[in-house]
Length: 443
Length: 166
Image (tube, rainbow over all chains, first blue to last red; front, side, top):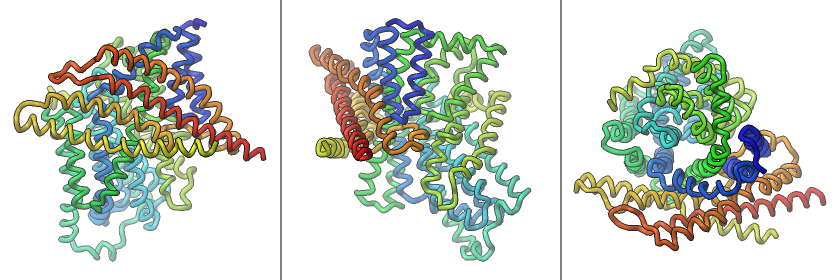
């Protein structure tokens, strides 16, 4: 058989969709479709290069070493238990504010985002420590769940983030530039969530009542200041250590991640339970997350390798360029595709499938690569939130108390997805929000 | 049949638990490299290559352990709605259509990839020449372990089908 590039495109994407909805692991669907595609299209001899690609792109890649290390850093920080105490301190600080608890969730999540970068961990932790108190104090169910999920997702956008590392390794943009470029949009989203919470709680006081005065009175202001110093400063030191080393050019992303592991390990030894068993389980957990991400990369490398050798890339690029509206139309179409893919796939699959196809188109159109990659990163925030397959929904459902149904969670994400779309429009209208900081930091 | 599936589970459990701590060793090597550069102004001759090799070995060899513990991403929106019997049938079909060809590709090409490197005695180009073939052989070993785990999963799915019928 020797399918035309158009037919091959159709066959490979149909295979991908069928395999995914059968519930087969994504990595194997990608790899299997690659072999089937090679048989049907360009022939089995293209597969010789696939192993070279897998070895070169995935295994022999120094930048990607930062992925397991940042994951490990996040796990150690999580085990240190600083998060829960940080939450308590911030909650008391914002006690007199309507929606204070929800605001606390946003602030703590942004701090966590800058330290961990693992969405699952942030949402599970915040779900466990914040959701029950919020419901207990009479917070609106959907607002509570929505703010936890949306803020938790910031972990993958605010540097350091394993998604940005993967994106950098698949694009001509450096990790440092991408981290700097995503910082402002990430913080901007955090501010937008905070404003949304404050405005809605001001308009509808029943959505987010204050912490009762008696409870606030149990902790003196002096004690509160001590708590803030003790539990908010250490994570800040971690952030400054990692991002500082990276942005000042002292360390590469991989080195910065190792420094991060070291600091997080110290925090674990100071605040955590210091048990060897906890340590070992942390290594196992971090290894599981790493192999999950990396195996998709292995499958996707095979898939895109066959796809491009069979001429599929040019089919897609002709389709995109034939869109009415020129460059703007093509950009909107590509970002919209990322949004739609986000309903079904997780970020790993989307980045690995879309970047080899889209980035050459973006380059040919003369659009700023850094800006486009950050735009994709922001749009991918929705991939965690949009049903039917939104990770954040499952993570939160996993730890939510009875009475919070998956349907509640579907409704909860709607305003936040709207805010992300609004953020994308802002970033498109004012591209310097993305490109400004990298220009200042990295020249 | 069940004994085979159990043996495979145990094998991959033990192997995964041995491989997982590599991640800590990788961290230590990177830290050593930073410290060396900081204190002596001269980076290590071998750390860069060894870090990459251990990283490649780590995630590839953990993949079978990951499959054993269901960490690999899958879309189960439809699968969840089906009966257990249909789920098992979908699993078997999925493994036959996608998993088997992929593993066959990794095994056959991974082997020749390893042999090419081994017969030439390929080494790294850095200050210290480190043999490359062990890390290239990892692809074959990892694929073999993943294939075994896949067999265990299919055995269980077949049993599920039988039980539902009985």
